[in-house]
Length: 65
Image (cartoon, rainbow, N blue to C red):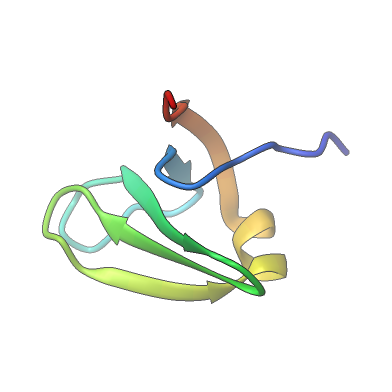
C-alpha cells in the first residue's frame, strides 16, 4: 500500500464526510495524534495517527511554506 505524505496545514479528504456535509479537513496539529479542523463548520477532531492514515482518502491541497 502506498504511504501518503501529509504535513501540517494540508487540506485532506477522508473516506467519510463530516455530518455537516463537507469533506475538507485542515491538519492543525501533528504528533502521535492528528488534530484536524472541518473546513465547513470549524469542528475539530483528534485521531490517533494510525486511525487517521487508515481513514485518509486523498490530499486535496499541499501547504506551501
